[in-house]
Image (cartoon, one colour):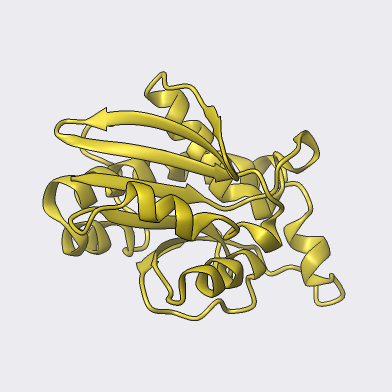
Length: 195
């Protein structure tokens, strides 16, 4: 079995620490954790690692957020077999910071990167939605909010979530979707047993 994980975000150093780049940030974290390096493919940066018998393929689009789905159909046609799993990780303004929801079949909810994925594939795939909402001031434009950098405390909170997301992905590989969902959809999310 193979697991393909696409983290949504914008390319470029200026976006690295923004709320909208949680997907890219997590993919970088997971890749570093496994000492795997990225190579350039058409439309994507790709990194590969192994979790027991499961090959995990980590993806970051080289297109901007609103076009993160560009080229995805062709990529999955070549790489994704019927027994494999495809997962998208992205920021979610409709969830509070420190909350995560693993779900499929949901609409884009105003997220342009997710909309690009759905339009490209024709369906809404399995998604790990990472909450970024810290009750932003009502006068703040949504675009300005998601493209702003995390505060130091917010960044700490997000960084503390990443090992839990890794554990959920390992559960998805080892024990299936139900086990991964039951773990990551709780609040507060329990500390993984190995930490």
